[in-house]
Length: 205
Image (tube, rainbow, N blue to C red; front, side, top):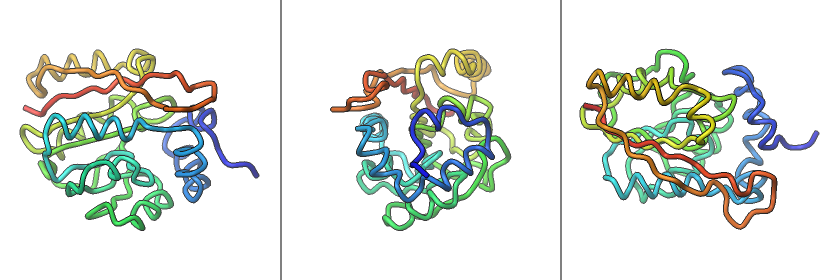
């Protein structure tokens, strides 16, 4: 059976699809996707996080195999992901204080205000998680916690991130947003090689 690919990932629909996909992909993800596809979004998201502040501990949302944490410069970080297989690979790298298996569309098994920052790359995308996860992530974040979360412009529009974030800002729950444009892939030759990412940043008030 061939390894999953980006099109397969974009086609999943909900938590059960994600569990199955990443169970099958975990062992080959770093080389079969990260390296082969030239996937640099985790590096770019981590770079922005470090430039805006070094708030810790940081919750790496949809951490997968730990590609974001590899660029966090040793910040204290916990990994949260729906896939135990991906988390097992991440844990083996020694990058995280803890790994947490959880579904972002449900209540998280975490206390209020536990994190000084929230970071994510590759989770708020096609077929994965939308803005419904934001209130629960705000709950587990401390006051003034830094959020740096990557998505894609089309996903931002189609999944309703704009209205959800506008509502959170209007109600005084988050600071005004800043956005950053990043490459998702680098030195790559595939149909998505020129895709750009949109990184949304704000702080919890």
